[in-house]
Image: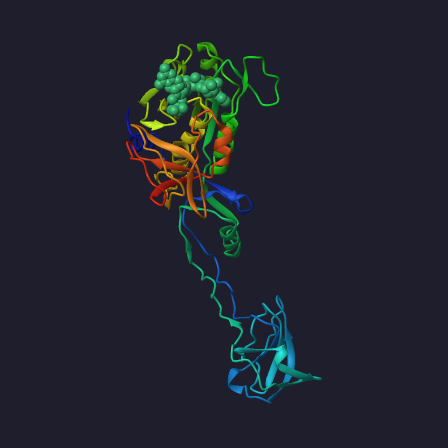
Length: 390
Ligand SMILES: Nc1nc2c(c(=O)[nH]1)N[C@H]1C(S)=C(S)[C@@H](COP(=O)(O)OP(=O)(O)OC[C@H]3O[C@@H](n4cnc5c(N)ncnc54)[C@H](O)[C@@H]3O)O[C@H]1N2
Ligand code: MOO
């Protein structure tokens, strides 16, 4: 059996970043910027007032001074002309500063009588002027790759970048396998259960910025599995669930081989997730996940997520880990790296007692996976432990 790190390197070798495509700005959130983009203008494009008040020349300011108000500048309506030393222009937030002015006295600090203002003793020292290009200048770059946040979308808009180059979202075909499975909402027979992890994985895939394609459940026979692989044609990634172990009905590896899968590895020294397989199938990468619901989801976080991030152009990195103190003693670990459902709170990491890989309730209560290295000894509370956030 290979280690988790080795399995990840094999998986990274199977995938490459996808090509770029262009999307309208409104669809750019959550996408990965594929190329550097640069601002097509300065922002603000002119020195702008940051307050409502009166634009004057700073040299002329003194307590009790009076100024003639000779015009008005509002956002979108510049006052054109030159302001003299004893003159002022009524100005509003966002308006261009008229020539001859470099300071805005806020309206709270003046007394206005007709078209004359008189400065109070407290006339502000702060200029309340946003210099041209204070936010960004023409040619300033947003470097790729970058997972675009709502703030990035606002910045791109401000830079007047209406069409954004992003990495194409990978399509991920999901094949649940098993005679015992029915879809959520259907009526299961007495020996059947509901397909669950296909839906959990679809949600995870969506969250990662890829496009899940949920295929019909494949039954535990070669013809049905072969048909499912055919239906997956065109996907960038094919993810099967179940049928990966050593039982008589575990046919995924065989049928994938019949379909020409070039296997890269099978079985990883981890818990849960041991019977993981992966390889190249035509133009797609195939990842065969174990069927136990928690095993499939854990492999989703540990393997599928980093693979999808690499395809999106975000680099080849394992799921990020953090170190936190244990809130409770942890038992010794065995010969496989153990990803244990746990809860990280203000008091530290509490590893749950029940770790059977069929228990989705325990997974749903977890907000992290505590990672126990191979043969890690028992750990007392307050020892630090690595976690992966869920
Ligand atoms: N003799 C051995 N038996 C098993 C071994 C082993 O090493 N030797 N490994 C065990 C481990 S570890 C795992 S994990 C499972 C994985 O087996 P499969 O990948 O072949 O999964 P299945 O047998 O098809 O299913 C296991 C379990 O999960 C349920 N299941 C499957 N798909 C779904 C789904 N989409 N949604 C919800 N539940 C699903 C299925 O009904 C089974 O209960 O093998 C152990 N056995
Ligand atoms: O590896 Mo299985 O995935 O332990 O439940």
